[in-house]
Image 1 (cartoon, rainbow, N blue to C red):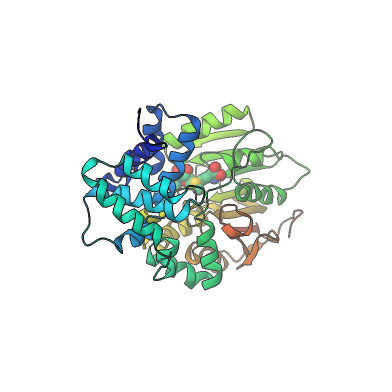
Image 2: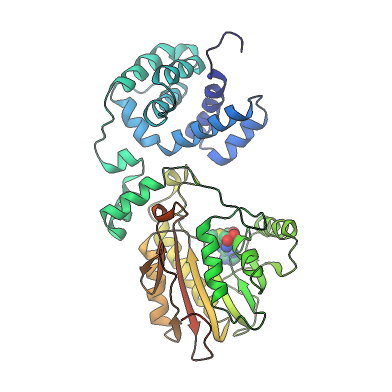
Length: 390
Ligand SMILES: C[S@@+](CC[C@H](N)C(=O)[O-])C[C@H]1O[C@@H](n2cnc3c(N)ncnc32)[C@H](O)[C@@H]1O
């Protein structure tokens, strides 16, 4: 790359990934490592490429608005990807001087688009950062912003959505497993509701990759960890093996047709499949892939799953339902369903701050502590012996 301006290699690599994601519909978290694996960039440039790709994908709608103001017609995909990559750096990478962002991006652009990209990016750099509405500014689809505002009010919704435009923090447990704080708190809350005087036998119904199951086992329970797909069960097994725990058994099975006897376990954790609105910062392209109908469709599945889960819990045992999403239909809606169909479930005291009360459970917004967004509902079954919580 002799003679090329500094940083062109990183931009060229970022453009290669972006064109796969934007034009070919590839997943950013799959295309990026594949391209990086055969690149010769050093660690610093790899980190830069990662931010450039994830940032451009995440802020795509805002970047489109910023460049479209200066275009009379859409350039072909390779030119467009360069414009979006440049706009992302100019608008959101305060640490990169605009002239360097423009020159390195132009240097990585196919020759036939260079003068267009150069002219438009210079205009973007010289114009104020003004947007027509919050959905464009925060770079989410309209329906997603509307749903969040309807479910949480404007202020809380926009704060949560803004927080999910920041990269996720990494938290490592004492045993070396990387797990977000919100998930650690769910596992702790569930474990704290179990009887501490005996080793409890619990089931986690949707358990892969095993973060919560292994955390619960570390608190003294024996955990049957179920998941539906072979590949997920393999992942679960390898994580259990890596941690060297003998207190978690991976089981392949369907949470809707649970392979355990009714009333046979001390606790069930259902960490259900969901729309993932609380973890959008981890999956930069998820907001563009999610369908508006997803929360409602998943809520129907979640209702069937909690119905199956309730039957497993012995009298006096614990049921915890958690989801890494923020839609009311997948959180409050499931709690309301349980209140109507399973009145023998008594809600347990939800966790306190930074969680906020949410129906009979609690909600953790992603801006509260920079963790994943998560909802949690815990209940004790029947009139049997109580535990330490609730
Ligand atoms: C939110 S993730 C679980 C994360 C996990 N609890 C943890 O803390 O590491 C949801 C999981 O549900 C699994 N799943 C989806 N449908 C299922 C079903 N019908 N039965 C069992 N597992 C299912 C998916 O394969 C996925 O691994």
